[in-house]
Amino acid sequence: MKLSEIYSKYEEVLSKGNIPYIRCEDCGYVFFYPRHLCPKCNSSKLEILVSTGRGKVYASTKVFRKNEVIGIYGIVELTEGFRVYCNFKSDVEIGDEVMMSSIKVGDKYKLLAEKVK
Amino acid sequence: MISGFASAIYKKYEGSAFELMADVVSSALDMAKMKKEEIDGLFITYLPGVFDGLAYPHFFTNQVSQYLGIRPKFAEVSDYGGASALAMLYRAYKAIRANEAENVLCIIGGKGSEIRLRGVTVDSMDKLHSGISLTPFDKFFRGLDEMNPISDYALVANRHKKVFKSTDEQRALIAVKQRFNAMNNERALYRDPLTVEEVLKSPIISEPLHLLEAVYPVDGFHAFIVSKRQSQLRDLDVLAYGEAHWPEIPAELNDIVYTPAIESSKRANFNLSKVDAFQLYDSFTITVMLQVEDIGLIEKGKGGLFFEENDTSYKGNLPINTGGGSLNVGQPAYMSGGVILEEALLQLNYMAKGHQVNDVNVVFLNGIGGWNRSHSVTLVLGEKK
Ligand SMILES: [Zn+2]
Image 1 (cartoon, rainbow over the protein chains, first blue to last red):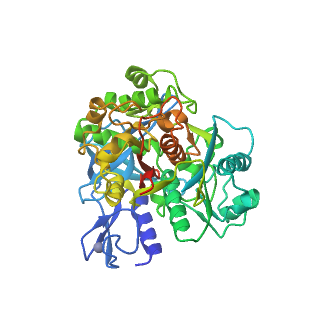
Image 2 (tube, rainbow over the protein chains, first blue to last red):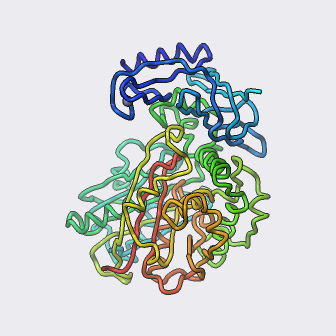
């Protein structure tokens, strides 16, 4: 698969608000940040899948500018086993269960995580 | 092996970075009693924006040599950010030993103020200049509200708190202890006494990290001349060296609470009980806490306890960041490598006025670079073997 094909598939999934990821058919490694060869075993046998979006908070921080919170930034581990950077919609703690979605900001994507009640 | 060094640091330098750089190089040449034509090797480090707010991605070593008026036999950029200073010193040392050069100039610095005053950080240069990409994945990574590098280090600090039960007070104590070392250091910008309460009362930048746990980006340069030539300085040698690079986006690391210092220090493989002083990269308090663990001064997770139990002042049992570190000297051009290297040389040459450690023969340095803590360089300097 060419990187451009990965990008168009990613855009298709992300534009619907979902989270795509890649699974290596040879070694089983799962990852989000797109590469056309597996970063672990260099295999080209990769498949693009759509995540359930469910995950847990791995780390988070409230970012301030002039004493105002400008964002809650962090990392979520999805149930499929890969981790992504995201912004959180509300205050969270490590281990909290979250549901992920995506929105387009300019020409880039922002992944968002919302605490599951 | 080091025949001259110099520095100049300002909160805001009104002139050009090129001008300040050339003045600092002149001072280093004066100490080495060397003419600039004798420089035949050049190493420099560079981040976009630190030379007068502009990006110089086009043949940068050429531009530096053009301004300085030198014709080196080789000229290279060391691209490890905060760890560059230690790596270039080692590369220069190797070049001298291999007779590839006689006198190698190493330059670290620039102007932090240009970026600071525009309200961005050096790790968000893509918000200042168009056509800059920070990762191969920016479309899926750079849409976020963050403030790297501090927000990414904050993630590590929070996870360290959760996994190892370290506390905000323990991190604040690192800032307090470094401030004590800075109080009599004439090079330090911040010399007033500091308490844990004051650190914790300072504004939060990215929770849990407070303003007084973070370096202040300033304008300044350090220059070091590595040479075979005898000089007034002590004849030092590299006693141990190791580097390690973990390029991963931290979301893809096994565990973000480890840094590549764990590997670079293992590669250097030096007996820590023979060390008289440590200079550990101090972009943030958490950076120092992670390194005392990763270089093996204490087991993983107990970095906070380490600072409660040891006297890390320049008079203490385990002197660390003996001049106050870049938390107090300031961080020129968003890279502290020059600050810790200069402090090591001041200590080894008994030039550390007001904060000299007694009987210094071996100094252990560790540099960390990159918003994602990718680069670690361990360097041990001491009397020639
Ligand atoms: Zn694989």
